Length: 212
Ligand code: SF4
Image (cartoon, rainbow, N blue to C red):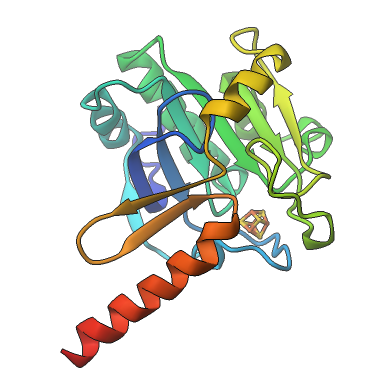
């Protein structure tokens, strides 16, 4: 089933603490038409081909990662590729039944629940936590757990996790996270005080590499 369906992936990170409970692999999908003003993942907006990857290939990548609690989908808008993301969760679960699934979405949960697309319903049924709603810059709050603005909500869609853990997670999960791969500092999470500084550092690094 779905053997010809590919996920258009913008980026991945093998181990993150800033995108859901515990240490998680993160998959940023390519493409989002919602267009929240102030979104800082603008590089993921265009529905253009980036990296087309089969759900099975992603599942094999995940199976090779040590020490992760689950997989998180970010974007881009995961529900604009609902079939591919749903098939990916199924492929991952077949190889790693204990992993949990977290997803961001710019759609509110009730909008997704009203969808008649079986792929949207199927994906919702696979998720343990959904961080839902469009980013609203006027409601920006850098102190929120796994959300950028106060209109966005965390929904517990399975009985694996519950709201009672939020205080603990808020102490262990950074608002923002940086990884240095030798050329550039990668940023993930919700833009906190350090992000502007790190973007400036990246700009300087790029300037040095192009002028050297
Ligand atoms: S839904 Fe997410 S990726 Fe899309 S514009 Fe809004 S914040 Fe950006």
